Length: 288
Image (cartoon, rainbow, N blue to C red):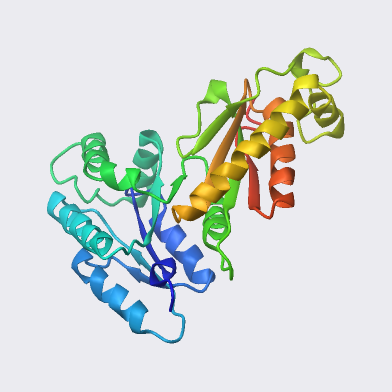
């Protein structure tokens, strides 16, 4: 096996953010999933991958239950790095209010809760795993995703392929609802005229041909797409060199209904022409 780390994923993140759903999605893609693996055994998993002749692909799910546990995980990852080996890290998170709602629905205490308030436990967990979040190869905010959408994003990031390629999610959004927290890059479409002020276009969306044609016909739209495409070419090459194969591009306008939707579709189409696997998601469409 020439690149064992390409066949090892570490899945982590906030309690309630969807680790189990992500693990099931990886199983459906043919990965062998180990849940709640003690961090000390991570090196043993790597040795198994190196010695395995059948091309086994392993995903390990780690649960941060205490500061000492997190320290052991960091030590294991640092040891791998010393040997120039680094598994891909999938990190899942969600907003505090969503985590509280999911935790209450599960009717189970937070792993760090003990006698503390739930919000204090969530804050403590965020602090413990902050550095791990910063090292993530794929960061997914599941706040506004159902289980099927999360599975689709995991599949987009880790679907099998013979050659390393960049996979991307292009997310349209409305700035008035907040920037997606899992974005690698954010671009702002508010420099384009707003179809909201055109009476015939106001009730339509960026998925309608009339709105899309209006947005793309603006003099600066084509120039922006050309320059963004050129910049992304450099990003693709750099990502592959750094073993980061997943790009999350957020495309915003005021409400996430017209300009960002039309431009996200256009950006996604151009990415596909370049051989990038793309999932286009319209986060705030229909929210107004």
